[in-house]
Image (cartoon, rainbow, N blue to C red; front, side, top):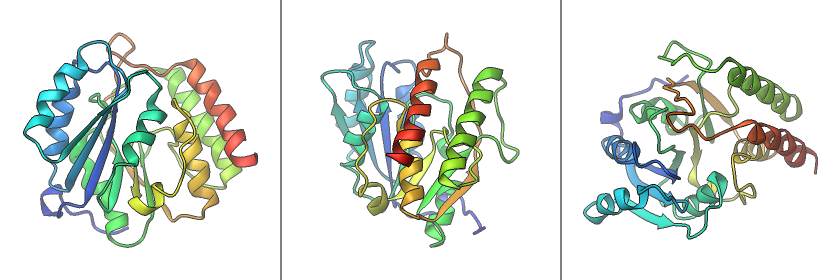
Length: 239
């Protein structure tokens, strides 16, 4: 594994794509932290028709920050649709997916970039289930469901991932932009996993911290998304 230098040691090379839906309480702080990371050359924010004042929060942030590209869907379509819009606008050599809550720590970008910058990887998955980073203790059945979905995905992709559903996924730009993202919601995760596996991309996995939130705090993914993930595992590996 290549040695991971700190964010401060890395030259700007990264586009962070941030899908946003009703995250008024956290979005400004996430934007501030993301832009503080030296590798970030561009931040593409896609507001997926938020109704809680998120759009009003992020418009002023983009006015005096040339690194921000701000886009908005007029109709709510889902995380996958927002990623489809945002990834198409990425211009940096490397692209990372960044949620608009505070569950993941952008200060760990340097770890995720290291295998790609060393020329060893095309794609890097973050994992909440390896390493010794901080992890908030939350829902048991969510973790069981995640492991079941990851295992089923691994069985058909022949990968040995530990956390297929983690937000943090990093790609060489030419890799992610060659795929057409079809899923509009959280099915993006099994879809892109199947596609990079079938394309024989070099995939690494890197330990990340996780500061999960409860449904009362704004968590959105539910059992219907888990069922859709099952459908996507079958669809994008066999059809």
